[in-house]
Image (tube, rainbow, N blue to C red; front, side, top):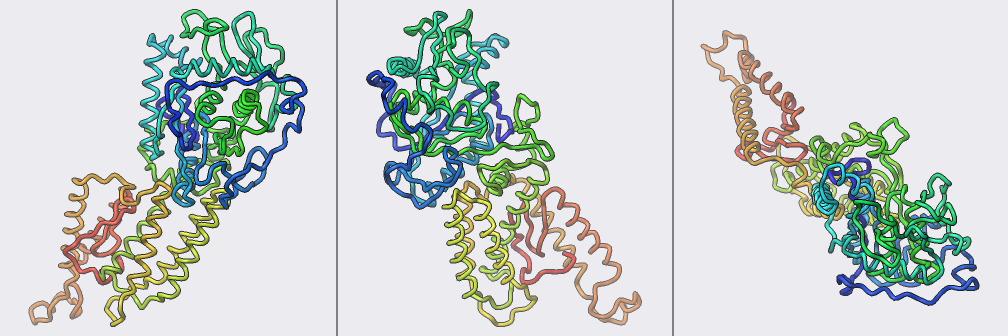
Length: 568
């Protein structure tokens, strides 16, 4: 779901993470185990929960690190490249938010973020649904996967470099579990399960807050500690299974992430992200597994968590289990992907956010305001909109200030609300300069600053994944119909507004000389009524020759365009 908006692949769990892959995407990845830990090892008894500032390239950015609960300088192990792992998440709000963050890192700060996406194509829910529907778990997972990909595409989330499925990495997962056992941090039971031994890592467990006994996994039997979690689950009758040293079974929930991330990134990860509800136990257990396997003090350097999406007036997050979600397909019947993306941009990625028609209307209104400004600026640059003299120096300075403000905001933990506010302020000052006049006053046009501003705004939105030119799907046939309708209305208005010539034969109706005939006033009222009646359908006739669909400007070419008419 998109931050509570449920995708078609309701039970498909997906993870993505990124870095330069260096040819590691091979079917067989050898995971070398290390020597056994002893109780005197620093891993077991060192300063357990402290965070160490990593060595590497200081990017100049600061990010809120859930490991420290504060902003930290973003330092990457490799210059110009970030390894980024996105844990599987049912909330598509998180996918859009982190898609935005990755675009910013790549396009604004020049950091190469290449990611792969890991698809959980086997788990309890898939098995249960496949048995209920009398379909194979493999076929069902593929259906969910395709639906998920379609939803991602509809929301304009960039696709990964490569998809990796859990079922295609079972040998690597088994090898990873064996490594943890050999290092003294997991044990097998007589029933064929394998559990991580929490006591074996001492006080290193518990890097995230909010833990409770209720959050711990309930095992199938043989657990030494309630905190221990499954690495391998013994198969039940009629369930899919794989052979292993512990008998037939399948991977636990957390081990797949640690295994595949380690097979690509090794023993150090720059950035790990996901929904805040995954901090514990999922991310906590990933850390425990990876640090136990690699014998490292700090596997993930930065954990970024996205806040929940709430229905307005409710403290509950959107989720399928609470039955308070809507599907992506249903959502996109009312709003566009760009409108949802703007909705995401108006809040900090780590904050909870309320979803409502009102909040979506605000996002839509902002996009329409941006489109309207760009349209007016372009009309001015073409000489189709006459304005008073423009203060070019002020516009150039405002543009430079905006660029600096946006850069500073995005470097400060990806502060997109502050960046959007800076751009809207620029648009406000641009609009203030476009003071329309009815007749040319001899002043020359100042096209250059407006051209630079329009170019910057378009580039800025493109970085964030918003394309104003295609924000609203307006079929060509509909556009032609509206164009003819606007043309007809304009011709009727021209006839109705034509002043009456003064002759002895036409003064009997009492119309003052030079004014429209009184018998044509109903035509003007009908034209105004048509304009107002089209607005609920997203068609806005803004100027004599201008009309928009959902904020996207169109121009009726064969008309006078030098002035606005009141009541138009």
